[in-house]
Image (cartoon, rainbow, N blue to C red; front, side, top):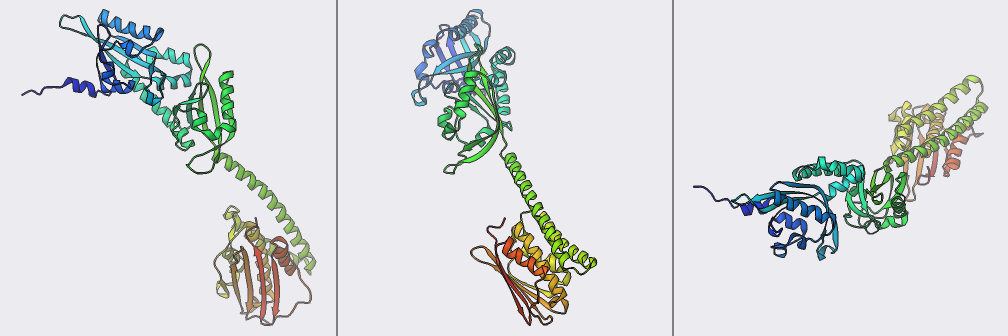
Length: 476
């Protein structure tokens, strides 16, 4: 038993726009896709003359009417690869007329005698793809491509999807702006991401991205339209709202404003293409700052080495003693530099600096009490030298010269200052020194001069105690 096929239902479900007119070019049928594309209801156009339903004058109407009449009178399929034809927008979409570009195929349908009874029109809206081609290649090139590329409506649909996908997925941001108000006609994914995924299609630039109105970009687009000359921007800063309620975010762009030239020589819009180079600009700025900081630190380090050399020479009894003391101090400075290099000069941990200086004396002889503290680079360099001098003194005269130990404790105040205590126990009796050596002067200069802190030496008979504090928050 055969099943009856409802061809009318199939016709209505076809995803491409189709309509059927009689010999007088009056509507006989139209599928749902056709009606949706043109924003009409069937009861509005049923039985109407095509050009009463969609009025137009001039070349556009002549081309469409001529193709319909030829299909009717000759019985042959006629094609319009590209045709400009404006359609009226309904009131809820703003009213007025909207210029659209179509590709149409007209197929004659004969009756039982062979005479043409109806004409079936298959229409495709190719506005977006054609404007994209105009933006990419210019109007003249697009027109020449039309006859070959858009031979049939089905081919147009496939080509449109492919080129639109390429446009949407391009890694650089792209947009097509139309008219003197720079209305967004096309926007790809990268452009949408740049502006925070705002819906801008169909809106003038001033309304779609109000924050750019006062940044000179509208004036620049106006000049491109007027002069019909492209503008190339390099490392241009723009402030954008990329999230609802968030403050303006600065981005840096390389971009081109390319005028879209029509056959009559006028510019109808601007094709925008560019790349967000914010990460590169920020990386370059960081590199510049690092070079400036490196230059500053090299100068400081050379000054420190010079001071170490001069002071060591004054306190040395002979060249051999000078060489030994000078080499050990340079090694301490070098070790701290290595720790900072490992962190790309982002600073170092207090325990790391202490371990480097005290490790040779045995971890079992050093007790540390305090959470690890991140030291900014400047603080780490200064404290590295301080701990080296204290350790050297303890190894020569203090608790590390015998079987004694070191008790180290520290904390950070609410104001961000490091409070540190160095206590030696179990060593030989301690007495107030008769004169201040280079090590004591270096320690004091590092804490009070370089770090703007305070230091106190307690020469208790049971062991040396050194207490100091140094601000961390403003050390850089």
